[in-house]
Image 1 (cartoon, helix red, strand yellow):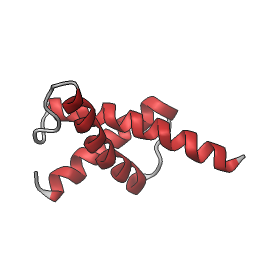
Image 2 (cartoon, rainbow, N blue to C red):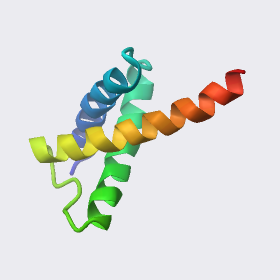
Image 3 (cartoon, helix red, strand yellow):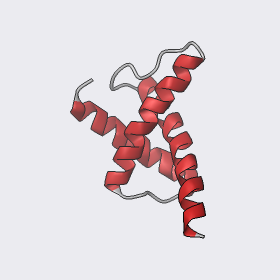
Image 4 (cartoon, rainbow, N blue to C red):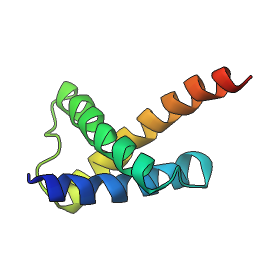
Length: 85
């Protein structure tokens, strides 16, 4: 995938994941970064269970990336939430 496709997939996955986890976005740049990291994490998780990871800019890859970004965002909020206290 090209870098533009990763950015688009990351933005969409990060935005959807942030809406699922905390109902408000983290900001466009943070959504992109967490979405791209989420796509990689989702690919690793799906590969671990025998399925294919991110295969391109398509619906299946978006689902993988969103699930990965939900995991990354949950971990991010757990770490960042503890630091704020």
